[in-house]
Image 1 (cartoon, rainbow, N blue to C red):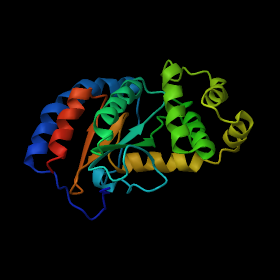
Image 2: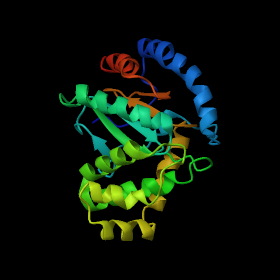
Image 3: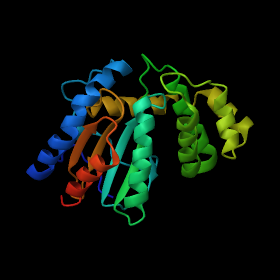
Image 4: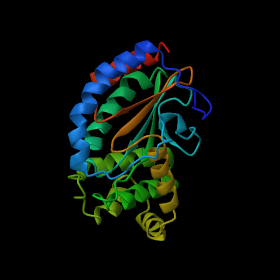
Length: 236
């Protein structure tokens, strides 16, 4: 798997930049209002850049092949309605491109605390699921949250252990983990990573190309839009 390093310059050639501006640029304009609706107050520092994204490690939650040619790192908020839509897009991307080892999807947490105060605890819950049931349980738990939350901080928090039970976890062990807050610092680290990497709202994603180039995009792009960006990324 190609992972970015802080001393690697942007390696995206003109073709993908142009494609990105055509596809993601238009979407960014449409999603700009969505970000305002989400009330994101995150202001990245002047040094923020997608090149700052932390390298992918064994501790990341990855769907697809670890040796995939292209990786998409997504920073997501479990109470963001646009993340809920984009989650389905990314599942479709992995279904189409993941089986042949072309694309892998890495999920990182980006809770927008100012408008979705429940999201951070939901993120911790997904990590508690992973602690007990591994990567499969993590993805099943995230799927479970998105399946039932009305978004915009609307999930009944009493449903967190119910989701754990539904995916076959020991609820008592899960609840003990969640009550301990042991993953709070991990969620904070993900959030800091998102902001340092240029994220201001959710979903925020970064494509890592075969040569280690990085290309960020914002918003709930459609399958066809992401497909267009990936076809350029495969060439670079």
